Image 1 (tube, rainbow, N blue to C red):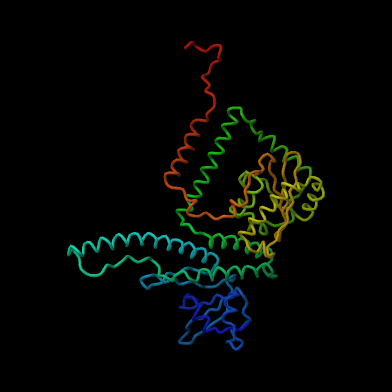
Image 2 (image 1 turned 90 degrees about the horizontal axis):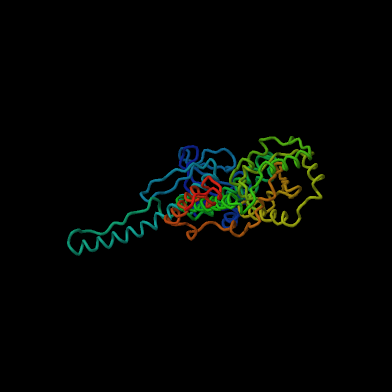
Length: 422
């Protein structure tokens, strides 16, 4: 499709640096192609599609240009205008990482402006009072934010650009499984960054509060075991049962290289998200292994009669919803996976297959996440979720108290019959 490049650069272009030269870039999104369509537009050397980037730069007085691929290696930076007229350079050789950086900077910019609004209002009032007293002369000069007012207007367009380019990667015949896996992870990273509305400090407090509440729940559960209210979990028995179920399948675990699976399995945050609908265990406590084609077929053959088509099917729908929410390619069909959950002898087994191959995960059935609430995980933290400093301190104090006193009956070291008189 041809577009009016000069008009597009004027209205939608962004300042950049390309191969160490001042430059402008045009993120080619579906919206840009529609807005600036022109059958008589200049030919950039290829048919422009959503996800392309057109770069122009001055070369000895001549305006040069080319179309670059943000999924390739490019010496590209984005230039962010500051309120003092200077520019801050943000490396964009990895465009997804650059967009994540810009999204964080935009949140910080908004927070800074909120603080400055209060500071400047107080300072302006004080300045006016001082002028009335004759203590100062001249107009009040407010403190300026670090970045210019329009510094981050291009973040949304860059986000759309990256999404549309990543969508193309799933059908790239030259990058294969590794490219598809990386595209899925980049989508996950991109979506998280663009949805972030809290500062780093605020997100830190939200995560700390969640962690403390989880630890409090675990400490209280341990107390119930120590008081004899709940039977203690026999971890050795769990391990034996899982080993027994797995050994009966006689899996080799071969057929898929570590390189093919490392991109997905190595992402701890994605693993945490994927396991939440299934088990309360942390990912490192879940047994997992890669499977070759014969292994996957063996699991399907021998475990078919033990498939959990009710709770298991619901848990799989929940994880699909979570991934679709964070990784648009999942819902659009670019990234696909299949899963079945089996349960035998108190052991849950999750078989997952996607472009990268198959994997099997195992955990004790008693740790099922039976109280998982999908809606709680589809919502991003907001200011209402940020605990106060006092609330964090109260949670920390409760954890400390539970660690020092489990609430069990006190053992004074002698039988009741031998107890001294009081």
